[in-house]
Structure formats: structure tokens, C-alpha cells
Image (cartoon, rainbow, N blue to C red; front, side, top):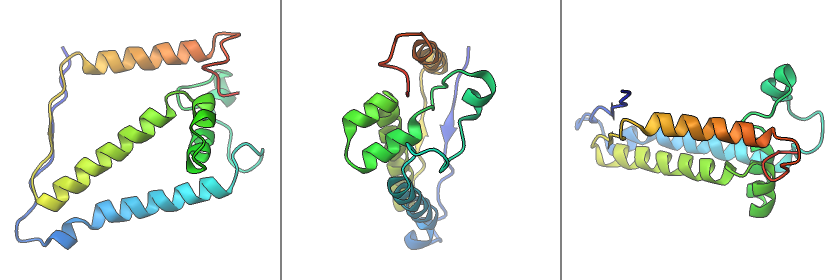
Length: 147
């Protein structure tokens, strides 16, 4: 049985709130800059970004293939385009925003974040990622491919 137990250490009360928020703010700023770059430099044009290593080495689309193009589409508020490039991209990106929010809130309040998923959670997530990888490499299933 696999169990993941994550608990952030409580913040030192002697450290001010502004200082505790430095890491989340820097992370948000770096992410915003990277997103602006991806929004400006179109990944659909060849030569701007490297090829996916999984696709280059194995010739299959990994679960992340199309994520950069989906991010470009989402930066231009094209949700349908993002779904066409990688159907899980909006969910993954939304999940990352929620995780960042929990982290920032934890730093703001000085209280730890406690998350105790069910023991089967890693198995389900792994099975879903594997199923998505297989589905996007089935010939003719264009709904899952990033092409």
C-alpha cells in the first residue's frame, strides 16, 4: 500500500509575512514571464522550441506533448484550441494554480498545508496517465493527439 503524507513545516512566527511571501511571489512572477514568452513566441512555428524528448527518442506522444501549444492557446483565451492540443492541459494548469494558491495561503497565514490523499490515489493517477498516453497514440484517435 502506498501512502503519501505531505505536511509543510509551519512558518516561523518571528519571520514577517512579507518575507514569507517572497518565494510564492517570485514563483508567480517567473511563471507569468514564462507565460508571456510562450504567448508571444508561437510554439506552432517550428524552430522556436525543442522537440519533445519522448517523441524524438521513442516516436510516441507523451502526456505532456502539446502542453506548450495548449498554454499558448490558453494565454490567448482559446480554450478549444488548448483542448485540441492537449485535452488535459487546462485541468493540469488549473491544478497548478490551485496548488500555488494553497502554498501562498499557507505562507500568508503561517500555517502548514496538510494533505493526506487516500492510499489508492497514486495508483489511480498513474493509471489515468498511462491510459491517456495509450489513447493519444492510437491511430485515428485525433481527439487525444497533439497534432
